[in-house]
Length: 195
Figure 1 (spheres, rainbow, N blue to C red):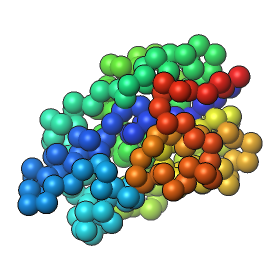
Figure 2 (figure 1 turned 180 degrees about the horizontal axis):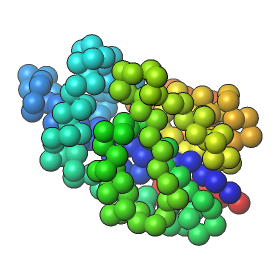
Figure 3 (figure 1 turned 180 degrees about the vertical axis):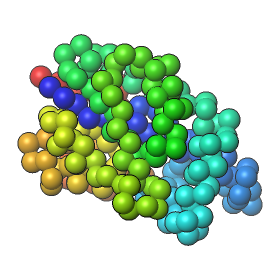
């Protein structure tokens, strides 16, 4: 069985590293925490334009030592190893290709050999011609299961890939409202049976 797995906030933390960077670099007078992110649309939370937000994220991902400090979420390595014993696993991330090398290095360092491949949807570039929906990648791979922390991506895959089991991962401010709408899984430590 093929399983599509999101990267940020599913395999590794992102906002817990982004917020201190943003606060120190751009917004020291009123610090943001991950709990402030009622939406995963950063511009909405930070009160800046989408273009400004893309630039802030680009600087964080390209230049910040904090971004390079990403480590797996608790239980992620063990959970992925367990899944990889009997399933083909693919990372399907909204990250852009601009950070493909560092993303692949991160996955190799902590999850070496456990994922068949990594797919970048380029959804946050501001260039709609480059962006792909995660549902199109799930269809292409024939994913039987899709795991993501975003209600948007879960709804997209649920609507477009009717036979795919969709799991909303984590208990985050941006996804708590969607938990009744999807099968949910709060952490790697309470992973459901996939067989």
